[in-house]
Each structure stands twice: as C-alpha cells, then as structure tokens.
Amino acid sequence: MVPSDQGAYIYEVGIQEGGMSATDFRTAMQSPQLDQNQKMMKFREFFGSINASVYNFIGKRLSGS
Image 1 (tube, one colour):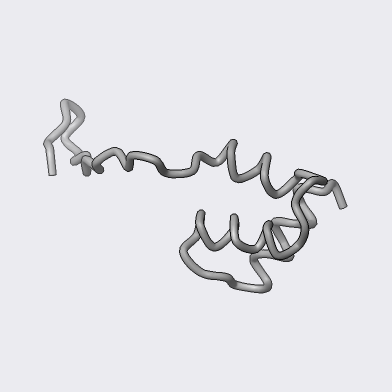
Image 2 (image 1 turned 135 degrees about the horizontal axis):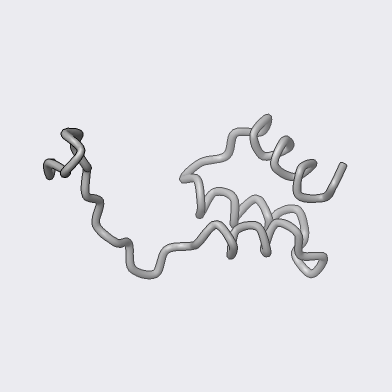
C-alpha cells in the first residue's frame, strides 16, 4: 500500500508480462475465424475458468444481440 496525496491508499499491482488485454479478448471473442471451442479457450485464458452464464452473457453482448 502506498499513501496518496488525497489521504487514500493506492494498491500497486505488478505488470503481467505476456497477458491478454481486454482489447485482445474482445477481438478474439468477436472473431469469425475462431470456433466455439477456441473462443472458450480464450475466455478461460482471460478469466482463469469458464462460467457458462458469464460466457454466454459476454458472447451475446459482443455479437450485438
């Protein structure tokens, strides 16, 4: 924890090398070149596990439905 000038605290988090950005995740989930299994693997890579309801929610939002 590092005190800030406003009297609050800031929690510093290290940078993860080689991680996936949110832009990379959205691009992969919207890609017509990836099949459902490949998209699920990208989802797991980004979130760490598969939650079917979250996966379906994000899929619908990114497809414009």
